[in-house]
Image 1: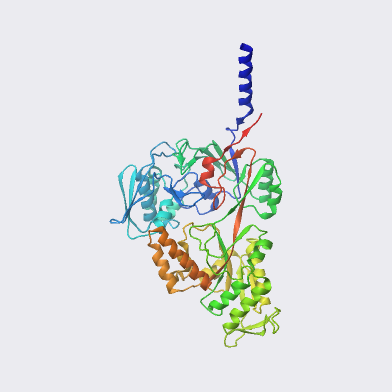
Image 2: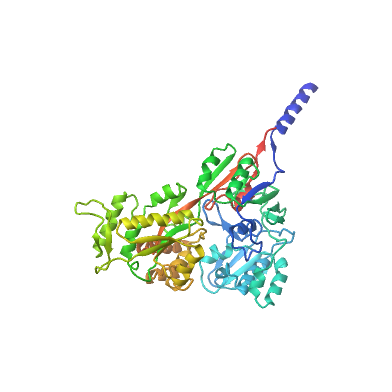
Length: 567
């Protein structure tokens, strides 16, 4: 009997020892560049944002699947009082990484700091807040000067800082000759946050070491249906100067994740590696061609529609982007499902090259355009055209498509070259011209001296209110966001109305109509949204959460855990 018991115990012990978890392993993450700062108010670069997103937390964030707002540092959704135009937010029991309580005073301090210093990145989110009250330690009440839809999607997603750490910094900056500059130039050595991780060490040029925050409010709790950790004690962000070295490190196992967009040329070999998984995710991004509507000939919507019809987006995606992109038909990415308008004009979609030419030809022919040699001959055959003439008979003058240079973005540069060829074959004297990115922006945003340009927004907000920013006529000014000089009074009225609609479904209807107007007038031709390609090792960690924008998100870092391995 004793021998049987001993044998049973040995079996149990053997089984237990054969499936052990790599709990002590650090999760090693490759970054393409070093973070520029750990000052949350000055962190405009992507890599600083990645590190800081694990330290400073907002009241609300988005569910990775539905993209709807969900309570995070807040305990529940905000309560609206229409009589006082106020929102009340109740906080979870939470602590800062130094062990002190997160209170409503911290929330109020953060908002007032932004308002007082007019911090550029956050100012527009808070300028309409009249005052902030703190009835008790876990209750904060926001009073608005007017209804503002972005309060829910933008104001309440602002990262919160600790009053105790920042109060002296703010007081000192306020007394300086240039308060904002003094605040932005502050270098926090030990940022106190309430996120899942805290800074352990930053050895510049080499790595950033982050350690699990034992006070993280979500640890061991189920939030929005997800049981949270974090389950990994240490994160090591390693800095790589070149993609080649980083990819080699991933294949060798020196890092467990590449937190940057991997170029298509590397993906095939990574997919063949048995211990590597490649994640392909849609971005919240827009890459497009814009027209200058302030002068002829592209002040004519029919000419713009014809150009849009001639652009072969399928060719661009399959040949230039090697299939790693999504076709764009709206200025809102299709992955942003709630705000995306599905019923829009699809210029040239599904047509052959000849059919696109014929359609564009009929658009312009009906509008009074003519050619010395038209693109469609008397027998209905498509031929190489020459000498497009504007309504009235004047020859179309030479025009330029400005693009970033190939060493900055080869995809946009090549798009410009291909569009040039399609337009020339149609009889238009188009010339693609790559130029330095800063010079391009100067031409387009400051001088407004251009014909066409190809640019992109790589990180669009998930709140589609940016439509009003990009296309409202009031933003057609030097360095304004309305780069094309678009002016449509009906669009302006809808954009103004949308900013004050607190009912999200009514606001959605308005924003869908705004997209229909934009795509009817075509100040921009949406072209593509590049896929973000990320790779991870599967032999040490699992649990990555996919969402719009990739697997590098707060949900992933709260759920990733070491895999079980057998001895």
